Length: 465
Length: 112
Ligand SMILES: Cc1ncc(COP(=O)(O)O)c(C=O)c1O
Image 1 (cartoon, chains in turn yellow, blue):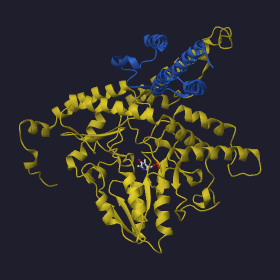
Image 2 (cartoon, helix red, strand yellow):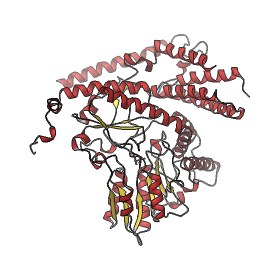
Image 3 (cartoon, helix red, strand yellow):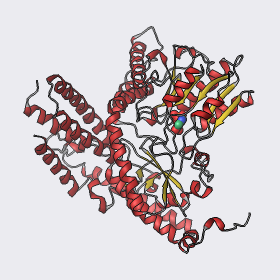
Image 4 (tube, protein in one colour):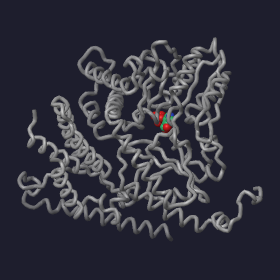
């Protein structure tokens, strides 16, 4: 019955929509209104190709999008990046590996420039950059590649408990192949201890893989010290820089980084492209995962996706130029968001050590509230409770667990991701909405009520399920 | 070297090009970026630096003009903020458009 009504409603709507769309067309039959070149406002000259049509029109009719505050999941493609990509998505379609004609040469030249742009973002040499399909592939290539290449002499890998899933999973695969893996714990603030690392390094350690900026809590590890220690102990150091590259200054030589993964779509570039930095001196050797035509120095076969790579290069160059400007903007917004929420909502905790933090990632726990219900209530804001990969599951985040967060705090956390395109008004909007919904949800929460009555929640015996 | 009126014209064109983006976040970003770029350029003393800043601004203007058109062709959504009357600074159409225009004029007076 209900379904039928909805259907009927939808049908009527579609007809109305079709009718409305028809109107200008009918009018345009009049004396050459759309052919005239005089006295026409310029804006009308553009046809929008993206207005929903057909049956999907009804579902999307509201056309309203939530405010985007999920910059760690992905960032919008910067129009300046798209501008650099357009020629290579239209006319210059040559295979960059074609050596016999101008189509190939043009693409190759542009790919070389992109390689330089990515290299210069991290202080590397262009020959040390290998393009991949993303940071996931770069991490897999680096970790599995180094471990397998040196497996005759070394069989041990060190990483941390708060790494991205693709690093942890690469390590798990290696464990199945017989490697030993040490997963370093982190402090309450999310930082690994240098002493733990020192003690974990063995003569058989092939690789240390520690991420720069964490994707869930924004904590920044002490990359320079880790790099120095690894160099002293002659262990290769890989860092997952997906969330750090283009956001904070990075220099592979100053920081003694031997391998670094970067993702295109986290620095306002296109999705489906990334890069792996592989040091040449002292040389780091890898066993490739993908073999074939021998592109990318044999470390990653397959035609280089020139338009994506050129987009990533443009994004890297832009990030390099705009780094300070963006950083200042994001810091200002983060301060506004945190002080706004903390002055208007009680019992909010920021996760991660504020002294070692990329400001664009603000992870807050709202006591006495389920993060999932707050996410649901804040439907006008695009947020996540942690990484995009785990946002579908109701499991509390393993990163927050590793910080030693109690289950309830891990369950009540939300990540606010700020970026280049976030505005002050958006932050104000979010603060207003967070205040309203947190208060409403707490009003309904028995835990909040008990807390208000002064009952210590830790003394309650919860029944086992 | 570019003269005063030339710079002012470039500034005005850039602000207007920024306003051409339909997508709220792009429009606001390019407006802010343009304003900040010209304001910091106005504090430069070295002729060479000024020349470089102007070249950068010129290149950026061309990109904004192309991408503003492209953006118009494909954008179709409004953010929750734009449709909320409490946050009209984010709005685009009607009264707010003239607001934006007024801001362009205001910016120009601030600049010199
Ligand atoms: C820290 C980190 N590493 C790796 C990735 C994966 O990157 P990509 O989507 O480019 O494969 C992400 C993002 O999802 C990330 O945040």
